[in-house]
Amino acid sequence: MQKELTNSDIIRFLKTKTDAAGIINSLKIKYRSLICPFISLINMVQPGEKVGDVGCGSGQFLLLLNEFANPSYLYGIEISKTLVENANKLSSTLQKSKYDFEEYNGSIFPARLAHMDVIFLIDVFHHLPIKDRQKFIQDLVRIMKPGCRLIFKDIDASSPLVYVNKLHDILFAREIGNEISFSEAKSLLSDNGLQIIEQEKRTIYVYPHYTIVAKK
Image (cartoon, rainbow, N blue to C red; front, side, top):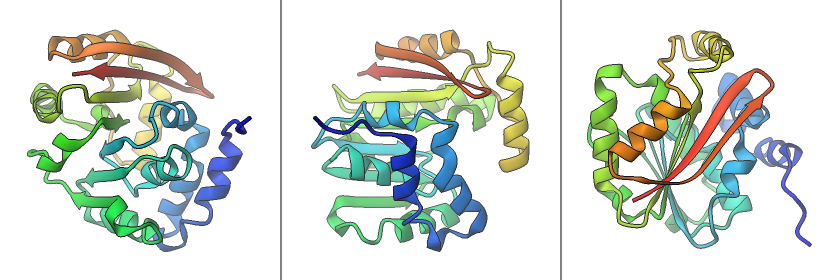
């Protein structure tokens, strides 16, 4: 029987990958799984799938997928040039044909996303300007191929604990997030033509998470 994945496994693995990321980013990379449901998200990927990550940060989640889910290809996009550089450094031991990280201009999704079987959007949506949200989802759905799954993970605005996340973002992102509720997120995805096939709510310590899997 395969051993169940734990946060200790994740942290142990990531500790070997963070030397090139700088002190602050290294801490974020190594320990984020303690407050974010990475294990649940990893288990949503099937072996051999092509996986995209919109707002991939330093690429640690895709590294975890490569180690624990056996995808065939990893593709991350991020608006921060520094974080893209981090992601490429952290992934440098992988076979080059296995992954790509690219800087994203924040408005036009790269055509390569159209080849993905699964696309992750992890704690990205609440950082978007409110005026840009509808177009962002419309454009993302438009570029997804039929059958592609969008895994939308964010913080539930309907929980009083949302204010803990706002404080977190002030400290670490230097901005206040604009979270939406679980029900609002489901409606947004459904209204844009996606079928909700799986959903989950989970509070980890003081962070009220939800995850929605929506299929085109």
